[in-house]
Length: 248
Ligand SMILES: [Zn+2]
Image (tube, rainbow, N blue to C red; front, side, top):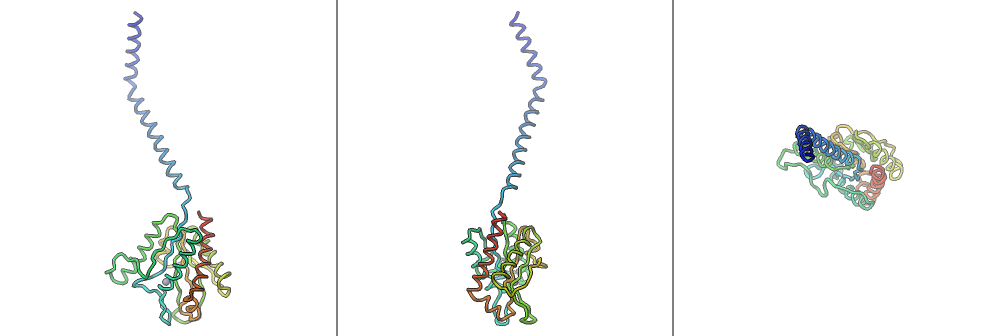
């Protein structure tokens, strides 16, 4: 009799379980799903908060088919840009900074070398922009030489900055260092960059350094000397080191 009663109780329990088991299964699935989703969100937030090590991306302006500005004496901007950039790369590496060069020889970065010059120019700039924006933690330094075709009256390095976080602060640091340590006669202030495609499309921190005026003969001669190139690169590398140690 006791056994029969136990069987009936067990049967009742089973009926109860069968009636509600789908609810339990759905509840368990919901709990597991929530835990997995919370885990995914947590991982995404941690990845966002994790500091990205800065990468100094050095862009020697122009190159290949595009020589950039040319001095009255025939010095092409692209060659000087590359010489200074290579020195900057080596000094940054010496200071322990991660670096990336957009070009390391006299070449351009357009994707279709058979296109017309104007199309190649657009393609080159778009490609540079694409590369920089694809590097996590990129701190762009675009190296150029200035010119004033109307005459030799202007001289002095000037830094331009993108309208992105950190760019103005970096530009101010570099402009101050140039005026203080390298060229006390330079009283220029840094400025926000206007109408420069790469700087306008940039997503991260970026500055453009106009190292000096090729249309001023004395400055052109100075910019061509390895000694001045080293001093300029050293000034920029030290500033980048200071900036990146705070940014990382
Ligand atoms: Zn240029």
